[in-house]
Image (cartoon, rainbow, N blue to C red):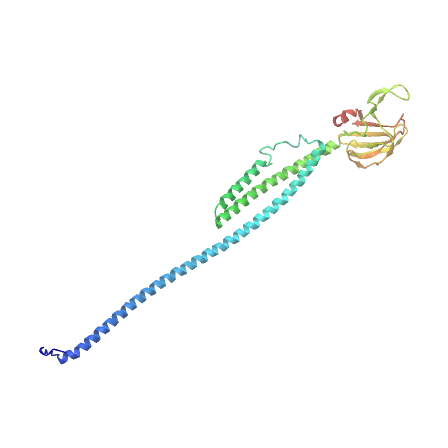
Length: 334
């Protein structure tokens, strides 16, 4: 509204302007919409590019993870195989150690029986070229395994570290297995030599043939108790009671038994080294011709048979068909 004192202002608008103005407005609106559409299309394209890039990265990551998983699976299979190998090696070691224990027990029994020394077959310390491993080498391997285990367990172990530990452990077991094989071969050889030595020792007539060691007559010339003349006594007379046990002085084979009016009941045993032992004046014979006897085996009983003045055992040793003093043999192991 205008005041009463204001003049009237008039504006004139051409007919063309009335038509053009709406068209221009429409064009402006259309341009704005088109611009918005272009911007939206650009941003959509940009988002699509980003999505494609991220999708490619994700695919690559998944592919890499598949490779890692596949590698892990292969590592697990490899470790399982290593564990099986270690288990097998451990069982082999256990079996070998059992065999070594058995050999060791046999050697201990031999040593206990024969005094603990076989100078020509064993030595207190193996030489460097003997093939016998020392306990120091075994301890060194054990220490190395402990250091390796400590290294690998100081931090969370990776697959590679576990594999390396298994490999080193396998190598250590392999080395120990080789040494156990060498020990076993050496101990078997020692046992064979010891058994050979035992056979030689047991075949040596060194065991007293009776529990009594009291002599009633020695080896050599003496006054004959029946004639009173000097005669050669080819053995020794061991005091005893009728029925006392008579033992074989060594391993051997019975070559003769029987009765003789002078010798009484007698036994003859052949031994190694062209040695022969004879046991006379027995009450009873407990062996027979051709029988193998061992050192310390009961072969008869002390008696008073034959040309005898009282219960005793006449013990005689022949070497190459010549009588020798039995005390030279018995005195060494009396």
